[in-house]
Image (cartoon, rainbow, N blue to C red; front, side, top):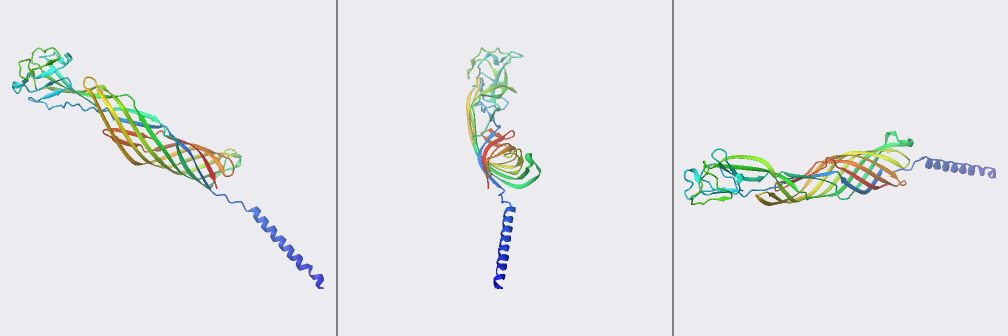
Length: 356
């Protein structure tokens, strides 16, 4: 009897073991492998479409200072002088005057001599279109899952978040020849009917000689230009943080299109320096210079279009072009300004990414 019953428990145990093994194998087969939503990468990035404006150039401070209207005042001009004579300008007239050329004589009425002082408006400016030096960026994508529609090949489009950190160096060096507008103040002194001596003329403080009224009438006009030469340089280290979202749309088995948008925060650490020589014909040449530096935060936004090519399950290549707007970066030195504009700037990048 025992010999007949022994195989039954053994058969039951064997069957149970086999059943349990089949269940575990089925569970393993049905459970999908977990995939991390993270993708990180690094690569080349460069700003294009930058514009730098240099302005407020061409300073010329005339050493001859305009004096108030009235009599009994020593006056020096670019093209002559009218000063006190030995009589103290008795009767509001002086022998102690000079003028340089015949164009200063006005024969209208009782005749007059025009004396002038010219200054620069310091309004020379120039634009420099350029790009940054080749830079670098690192980034991370976090996949939030299906976006609710499919791309090519019935593969679902996905969406998620992106964070990127970019470094660029921007250096603009400008040496254009420029022109600055001029302003000229003219004082007109009456000859009182006395014929004008031939130019150039230098009177005798003690006299005698032709007398000239020492109380002028005055007018001011803008016109003409001064030549501005020199060098202007803006040097900026820019670190840029981008935070936003993305949409990835499959096109082929290995190729996807990326659309990105978000906010930006730039940290600009830069300096501006210039040196200019301003020449006014028949007046002279003056040199001006200055420098300034500043560290500023530049808020902005970005909008990008890119693509990914999957080399394998882990590695991919990313390329993109992003419109990158930032608040302008402005520096001022000794009346001159440098302004770096991002209104038409965009970033091109080529990177390698790893999924894990």
